[in-house]
Length: 330
Image (cartoon, rainbow, N blue to C red; front, side):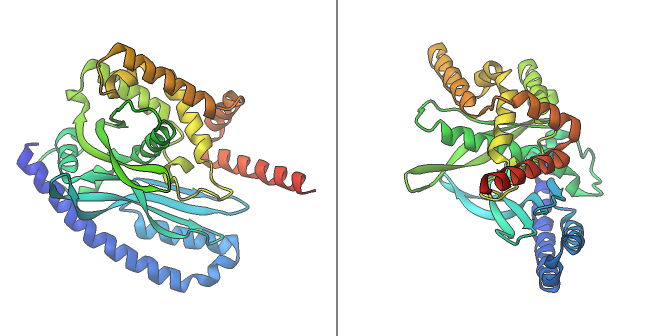
């Protein structure tokens, strides 16, 4: 696919996506107004979740429908088109959106996520992923499958950067996809108190056929590390924070444990400086950070996750939390 055609596809998708997403939001508001009584039982709430899933089915690239006994919820990640300044110009972007619908009604609604995708990146994804090849496109939204790992890796890099913010060594995050790699940078946002917060900007995309041998090996390692976590609580960070279902930090620790095994290769790719001493400091600081988060029972958690899948895994942990709380209260 040539560059002109890919730009046209990106522009078309952003226009259609904007129109279709607005329609979906209107349908959602109608469903909310009609469904207030449905929040009186978990059974009726399941019907509401199925309806919401149907409304947004064309738009999300991550979703979770966790049928927890305590507080079931439905969540998804997508994006919405905006025009916003970048450096010295204005560009069209796709800003991340998280839809979160818990049974208890707390934090229910559509929230901003912590990533943004430029129109250029979207065009490169059309051009280089080869998901859509040719001049006839039946469904532009097929390209969304290439973004299925964006949410968990954005949250991973956000938590990683915030935890390392005393470390002045700069790096640019990578995010894997089924057919390539997204090359990213941090966008500095206004501080919250003394805490510097960031948003991940996906700046470009390179298909696997154009990656170097080392980059392709790294892409496969990152995909392997993502297994069973792509629709985890980490994908919806920070909007589950404070809820019983929030496993964000635990999911971060599990992904960190997996990343630790190929940290030197990853660090060489993302680290800006070519200085070996600075690279070594960066790796050591990263390992020290991972050690703070990785629990002693990490092998047990990995085993349970791989055996049960994420939904059953989180239900088991929620039940354990509930029992532990009851025991402590008594």
